[in-house]
Amino acid sequence: MATLDQPSKIRLALTTAPSMPASGSEEVLSYSIELESTGSGFAFALREQLLTRSSAASEFNASLWSENGAVRIPGAAGVASRSVPNASESALSQLPELPPAAGRMRSYLRSASRITPIDTQERSPIRLPQTLQPTGFVPSANGDNLFSVLMKIRGEREASYGQVEEVLRAAFPTFRRLDFPAVASGQVTLAWHDSAFTKPFYVNELSSGTLRFLLLVTVLLSPEPPEMILIDEPEVSFHPEMLRLLAELLRSAAAKTQILAATQSATLLRWL
Image 1 (cartoon, rainbow, N blue to C red):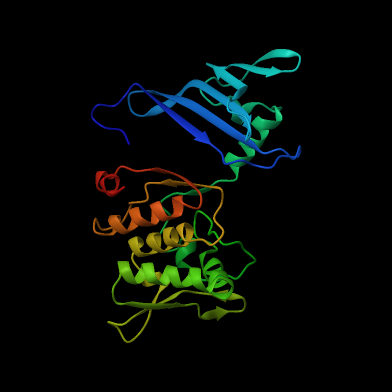
Image 2: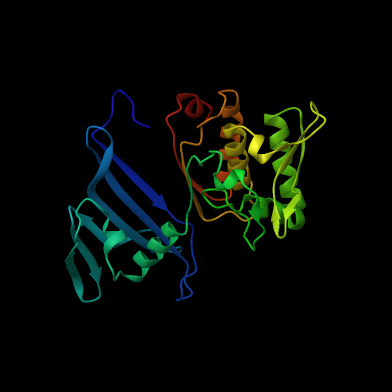
């Protein structure tokens, strides 16, 4: 979060849990990248570094480092020097050939789920009937498979689905349950049942904040979350009173997976 006293540089660091590469030995990867202030925001400085170690070792060894487009890769034959086409982007994202550890880190980062404030306009995917489809336990960034994911969680992970409904009741005290009525061959919509009303609300009638909260809850309470979740401005469209609940969800999810969230909400930061 940028403040009035914006620093000139920010360093981001990520360390993975021990993984099991093809060699069969456990490995820890530590990747860091430095961002530099551009006046209106931040851009790559660029300085980045990738370190590796086995779980039994106490010290890391350099696998890749770069600065302003000049890349050095240590190996058995010495240190190889390379350059990248665009010095304002990371070497990890540009080099076609990487050391095995760097390739694993790049795959790890690319597999992250990215959640941004979804489009909730009248004809957006989350407001329209959705075709049932094979899916995992995490909805897509635009929510076009949200109903399929919720139905899968309800059918296969009853306890997790119960948690979703409990959180919805905490945020909306008169909420009762969700239904997924069929509207055409292979298509369903979402019905929101509320004890204060005799008829359910359908997805096209729900507020933007309600839909965005439902998507975030489904992601953060997923019974099989991705290894990393990137969330941009999770507070968008939320009443300030809901930010405390959102902070609790983020903390709970962080016990199961790695989360990187960017926010402009001082209130959310205080709750965290």
